[in-house]
Length: 107
Image (cartoon, rainbow, N blue to C red; front, side):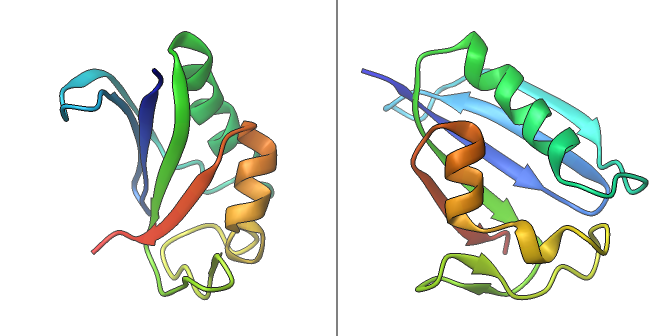
């Protein structure tokens, strides 16, 4: 059985952890959020690296802003690069990561 990829996208840092079914953190990584990036590719690449190193079956991505849970999209991301909020959707992240993704507010 695969593990969960727990992702926290913040205005200052991006964090990712692999968590097993018992809640034990198996691995984790952190990098500064690249505010110079015009696309989410640096974020996606960071998360993919952890996904590729482990048996992961789904991801939960926490974002700093209001989330439309029904539509699976970030409504605003005041601390993120300006181009990111419109493309930080459940479907776009699921496609980019090749995993089922749940999008959630980080509070």
